[in-house]
Image (tube, rainbow, N blue to C red; front, top):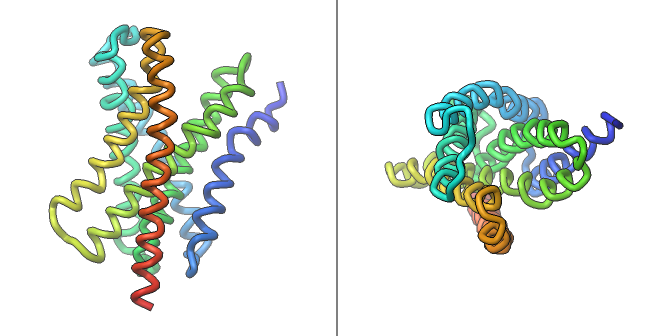
Length: 234
C-alpha cells in the first residue's frame, strides 16, 4: 500500500478546485484567512461524524436502510442536513468579524475553502476504507463527490453574500442553507439508490450524472453573477 499515493489521489481534486476558485478572485483574500477557512472545514468533520452517528442509530439502529425511502432519509438527515449545517456555521464564524469580507465573491471563496476542507478529509477516509479498490473510488469521487461539495459550497457562499450585501430577507437567509441541503440530499439519494436495487440504481446513476452537470452549470452562473456584481461596484 502506497500511503502517499492514496493521499495524493484523495487531495488532488481538492487542490485543483481550490486553485480554480482562488484564480477567479480578482482581489485574492489573505492566504492566512483562506488556510483558516480550510482548517475550519477539516475541524467540522469531528462534530459531523458524531452527529451523523447519532442520527444513523436513531433512524436505522445498528443496520443500514434497505428501501428507497430509507436511503433518501439517510441522504438528507444523516448526510446533507448535518454536513451543510456545520459548513454554514463554520462560514458564519469565519465571516462574522472578517474585515476582508468586502466583496460579493468573497462569500463563495470562503465557503468553497470550508467545503473542500471537509471534502478532502472525507475523500481520504473513503479511500482508506476501500483499499482494495481505492483507485476506482478515487476516480469516481474526483469526478463526482468532490465537485459536488464544491458546488454545494458555491451555492451556499452565493446566498450568504447576497443576504449580507443585497437582500436581508428571511427568504434569502433560508436559501443559504436550504438550497445546498436540497442539492446535497438529492445527490446522495441518487447515489445511495444502488444499494437497494441495482436496476433502479443504474437508472439513478444516469440521473445523477445529469444532475451533477446541471448543478455545476448552476454554480458557475452564481460565480459569474458575483464577479459581475463586484465589477459594477468597482
